[in-house]
Amino acid sequence: MSGEIKYNLFINGTWRSGSTAADLALINPATEEDFGRVAAASASDLDEALRAAQDSYLGWSRRPAIQRGELLIRAARVLETKVEVAAAALSREQGKTLSEARSEYARAIETLEWNGSHAAELCAAIPLSEKRNIVPEPAGVVAAFTPWNYPAILNARKLSAALAAGCPVILKAAEETPSAGVYIVEALQEVGIPPGVVNLVFGNPPMISEHLLGSPAVRVLTFTGSTLVGKQLAKLAAENLQRCVLELGGHSPVVVFEDADISKAVSAISEYKFECAGQSCNAPSRILVARPIYQAFLAKLVEAAENIRVGAPDDSETKMGPMANVRRVAAMERLTRDAVDRGAKVETGGARLNQRGYYWAPTILTDVHPDARILHEEPFGPMLTVAPFDTIDEAIRAANTTEYGLASYFFSDSADVQKRMIGSLSAGAISVNYLRGVSADAPNAGINQSGYGYEGGVEGFRAFQNLKLVNVASPRLLDPGRQEVPR
Image 1 (tube, rainbow, N blue to C red):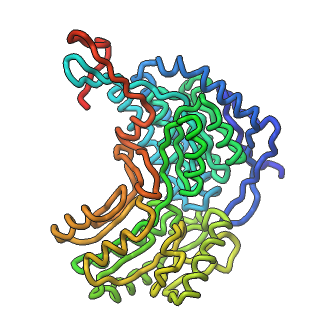
Image 2 (image 1 turned 120 degrees about the horizontal axis):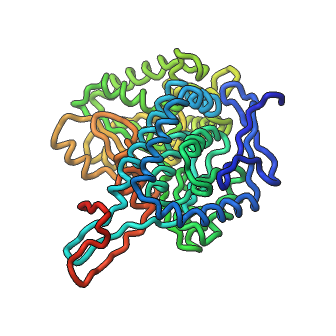
Image 3 (image 1 turned 30 degrees about the vertical axis):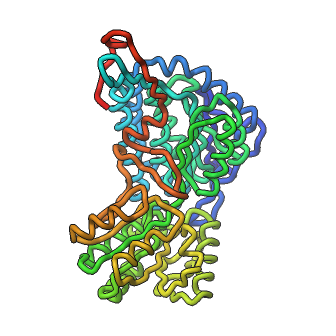
């Protein structure tokens, strides 16, 4: 292909092609066209990245935290100047609308800024008493693995906390959406990140994960992706006792009580669900509605889904673009067929659109059998099930009937209902009367099969630190030059 796009590896401060592995193709999900190439790392490339990260550790970890933070803030300013071109590249690779891509980069910039501005505070000694302190220290080299659905925010989230804490990073970004990793690393390079502190690789995911986690030089694994892959990575990490932060799958319920404002609930659910064509682990997938308002709610939800304009992601009128790859289309077909075979009714959608690209119509299913795969497998697409309930106990049981525990949502203005639901829903995050993503200052974590460890906020920052307990014989500051802060 003449004039095609090519994204390279970044190892030890240099952009380069893979040394032996063949490049990978980039596919536009809106047109199904091959439009570029991504360099693939070989084992020797990974060995070089490991050496570079190890060699950079001492200098980077000893650089004052305030300077590390300032570098991240400067990188955020650089990235701001590139949002339009970066968002266009992300939209072309992933299929999300330009508006969604711009919003995602705004969150990525916010994340760089938050971690940069809090670096000095969170790296300072923590006094416990006159004779005891906790001294945070960088945990070591980090292996970070990010998915294709929200690559800008997830690359920024993993890079910024680890770098601010003083850890070099080897980032294995998604091969299907490589530009987000490239633009963020370019911004860090432009503001002077030392060679080896950040390394960016693409390639064969199983080979890369086995190679990186097979090295005792890696001390922390941070991964966002499916539960199946997360478990495989955790097994690899166990061999070298590498710390794991795993943000895995979700199958989030929304419970709508009789006192809820139906219009507001429908609007909030449909807007959040069909963003990024439903390809979000936090997106709602199972809607439970109080029986007295069930029919009215369902009618409004179907109307909202049918009014979503599905089309080219670079069209300003489009509200939902294509799915990211043909694998997700196949999953939608399989889940729909299974549900219908078991008696489910397709209220709207339920089929691939008859046009070029990986387009799937917003889909709502009712009368879904309890054994249908859609109720047990994360759909990760623009598909919702809707069912009525009669009592709060029934709603709680249905909401918690899943192996996942990432996010849950409910709508009610009753203080008693809110107290009961917050205490009963099994999830790492609960939202009341609205749905939204996770901000940079908040810890995000799943429970059960949705993973463990925190990303974001103070808790996410601490994932990349060892907290050294220091006892002293007489009261004194361990380092008078350091700012001490309360826990």
